[in-house]
Length: 202
Image 1 (tube, one colour):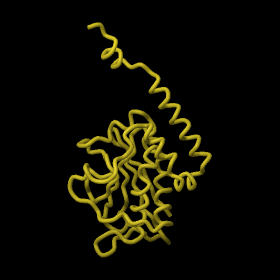
Image 2: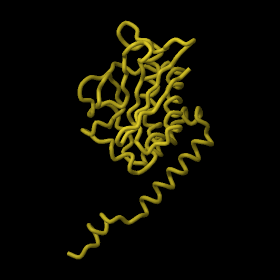
Image 3: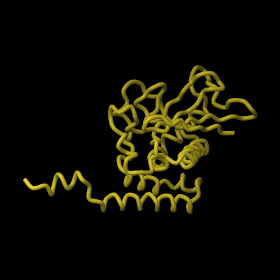
């Protein structure tokens, strides 16, 4: 049984995930670190992170927070209690140990964001994914960059066949079509910044 929940604060939505088996916490730490199941889940989220960003960052403005020094993630990294990573492994008591995905924006639709997180976790378990060593310190310069615009998020989501299969290809197609319409509207609009910069009389 999965126990995901969304925590909205400021301009972000943090998704927390714990798994339970027979009423026992399946993420209970092992040897002072993540057990094998938790590592597979983190590995799945990490490897599919570019492809699921769109579900937690559905608008043009969602991507402006993915910047170095913003205390929001900018790269696909994981670690412990570290505000520079996208995925945090929070090893506490067996009941409260959980994975936190920090890539969601406050304007995310929580059902899609949670569903995509679970899809990445399922893919990680099925593939026996391994996240590698947990990162330490400032990790803004480590790992692959996250999508920086809505267009990049759309492209990454459309290219992740594993996530599309788990979520349902028709549903993903419709979600991406709506996001594409949002991007097309944005790129065709003339903003006040453009008028001021390019059209103002010198």
